[in-house]
Every structure is written in C-alpha cells, then in structure tokens.
Image 1 (cartoon, rainbow, N blue to C red):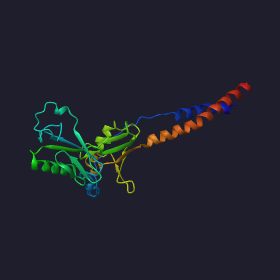
Image 2 (cartoon, one colour; image 1 turned 90 degrees about the horizontal axis):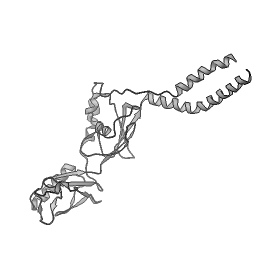
Image 3 (spheres, rainbow, N blue to C red; image 1 turned 90 degrees about the vertical axis):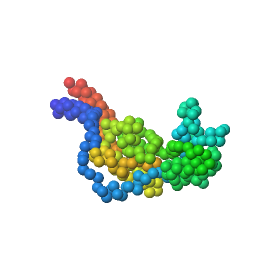
Length: 261
C-alpha cells in the first residue's frame, strides 16, 4: 500500500510535465559570416525582372493624369489638368493568350515576353509617335507569393514591385510566431514538376542581402517550427493519450485505498 502511495507524486509530475509550455526567444540577423560567393553567383539569374505572360493583368496609369491613358473624347494625351482624375481607379488590362493587350488609340500590341519596364517603354514610344508622349506607369498586379507555417497571418501576398524580399513578405504576414525556426525559412520556387528549395537563415545578418531571398511570382514561403515547438507538440500528444489512463488509474487507486482502510 505504501508503494502505491509513492506513485501519486510520480503521476502528478507526469501530468504537470505533459501540460508545460515555453516561450521562444528568437534571435534575428546575429551571425555575421558571409554567404559563399558560389551561392550568390548561382542565384543571380533568379532576380531578373519578371517577364509578362498571357493572362497577366497590367495596371497602366498616366502619371500626368491617373484617370486614363488617353482622353478618348479629345483624342490627345491627358495633360494632368483634371481635378478629379487622382480619385479614379487606375485602369487594368488583361494580356490575351496571344500575348497582346488592347490599348485605347493603339489597338492590340505585343507585350508578352517583355519586362515591366520594357512594356512601359514600348507603350510610351507607340503613343509618342502620334500623340503627345505620356509618362506611364505599368504594374503587373496579379503576381503573388504564398506564405505558410509559423507566421501570424498566413496567406497570399501580392508582389507589388520588381524586387520584393523575404523580410518584406514576412512583415506583411505579421512576422514570425514564437514557434518559428528562424534558421530554417524555406523558399520553394519553380514549376510544380521541377520545384527548387532554398533555405534562408534569418539569424545571419547577411540574409538581408542574400539574392536567394528575392521572391519571384508563385514562390511558396514555408516557416518551419523550431525544435522546442516540435518537442512541446510531442509532449502534448503524449499527454492526450496518457491523461485518460492516469485518471482511470488514480480513480482505481482511490477506490482501492478506501476499500482497504
């Protein structure tokens, strides 16, 4: 009977241990060792500007007047005198399957295969041949990356500029959770048949200039759990299994004790 009584503290400790939690103290941008030149040279090609594809959506704005590229009624380029133009929604144009986009005053022009800057220069030049040359801004607004894992607000995030970094996207996702492993940030890119994964260590301050951390269209960012979080999950899983057995054992032990008083 005395031996059974000694089991109470043991099972109590198991219950406490199985329900323990932790607080992860992350360390970012600490290590100062440089990134190998070989890795940088290998990934330089990955940071070139995105080239327009069919079904992309272009947002084209006349900087002089954001209402429209061309004033259809006047037949001339907008000169920026409109008072309500800045409140208008910029116009968007979908690239067709043949790689063309239909623009007022120009008809269909080929843009597939061009970078954003090349497309802007071509459109400006074509308008400049017959009209007062406008100053245009061209954006590709359907590009995105997906962020999953240990971030506060996972989801899809638009790539709003040519060079969007991993840090910027993690910031848009609310930052890392306390369960995140900041040394194991996966960036998965490439098509589904030939995906490629880069591992970024955010403890290394050199990650701020790592060319692999420049995101591309349809990249997937996955933030792994750290070892403490994985261990804690295993303990919690164990507690789910063991707690009913402990409750049953304690109940039986109490009954046994009362019977043999």
